Length: 133
Length: 239
Image (cartoon, rainbow over all chains, first blue to last red; front, side):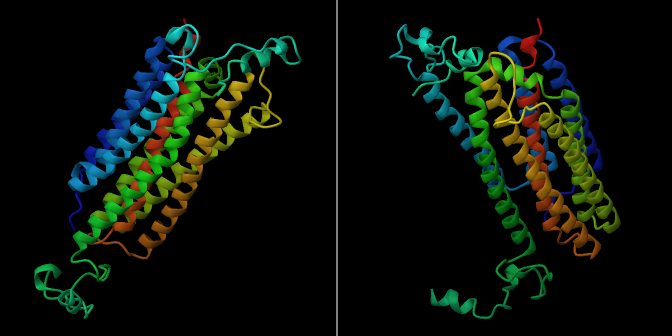
């Protein structure tokens, strides 16, 4: 049949790379890189996923149509994240008092006065940061 | 139109140009395919289309994760510190090992080694079950700490309610993933039975290969869940 048979050494190499990358991502988790922790971890995860898809799932040796389908999955995932985040992150950008900087992530509102000091005050304090729509 | 209908009137008729030799074909080949290669390509494409829908299935929950993470970074940091990095890391290694054994199971089927196929499949299921057992103890610990969202949820500190959202997403994402693992193990047990009955050959091993695609996909989901839930917001507490 048309299936590609990879040598065992390829699978061992990919397995080794995946294990090393797992170690790296765990190690990086204990280093405070500020906002860069997220992109670094995500880049490592994407690299690992790519290795699995290309070699364990044989996409490297698949037809172009199959490759297109695989790309489609991530394209639509990107559309889902991208369009949703551009909406949420830009809310209040032009309407919130103080403009974009004051808006922060666009949806925070100050705590209503009557809630302060009520039962479970500490909890409520946090809840006040909840988005109001 | 009528020509096409006439050409397919006899289901056993295969044009020599398509059939691959004197009208004889592999017993696994369905009549609506020209060749085993074409059938294999269709199966691969169909499986990947299903996996695309699976990506979007998890994508909805990941979208919720992403948005709440942006809204409540402190809660995400506190919540991820409460997850056990040793158990999570062990489970990552276990799943990657299971992907390796799954790849070997498919390879053994490709080269026609029946016994090796069965052994690799059983190893893969063993790794999968190990993952589920470790996950069970993680969940059990969360129940004991009252960290399961709902009426019983208790979390001290100013971000308790937001940490509850974090744990809601933790349980939905890992729970959905665990359901996929259980389905995967069930699928592989069927494959083991088929391998035992010598249903696979170097000419035809499509079911085991498609099960492999599913298994690797579930592995990929965990490759993303582990850093997102256990790792990325941990470092905010250092330095």
